[in-house]
Image (cartoon, rainbow, N blue to C red):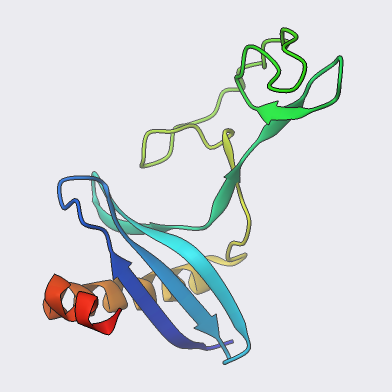
Length: 136
């Protein structure tokens, strides 16, 4: 599987940890959007697109965000979610709060993906924000 295109959109706030979003095309046939480029304590890395984990309300079965105290549908009190011993990731949030939508299975492919996205990020930074606004 080859990455045939990697597009990066820089974020406006340079002081934040989130530096950009990337869209990656594989074999001109499959696209993954919203890959995040993040500045961690040991440099740049990518985070795959994810969604927040939900828990059902015991009364109405509505799915609420994890760690919510009350149901957004019926207002009933939700049970306290058990705290599992999870290591926080480089962004500081627990990995149990978010679940990847798509992710590489092997370490070599993860490294390949990260290398290509970060190369596209560096090229976009060199182009500057004025070139990016002109492209939009």
